[in-house]
Image (cartoon, rainbow, N blue to C red; front, side, top):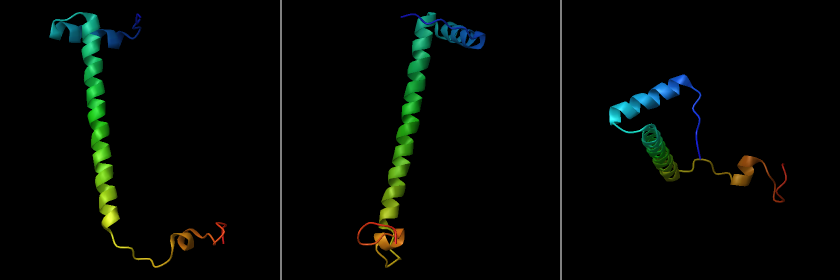
Length: 82
């Protein structure tokens, strides 16, 4: 499968990376894509860790409202809005 790059800025960047790394254009693109995918995965995993930490913390907080979930949400015993 071929890729046709029509953006001059992207083409210059790929050529610059290829020159800096001493590789051909295809390898420069492969390296750049692998690097970005790895970086993106790290960011995603970091967000997930932070979200889990928040969820764990929230789970330890005391319940300060004596109403049931249904009462708080406003539903009756049949699951209808009250």
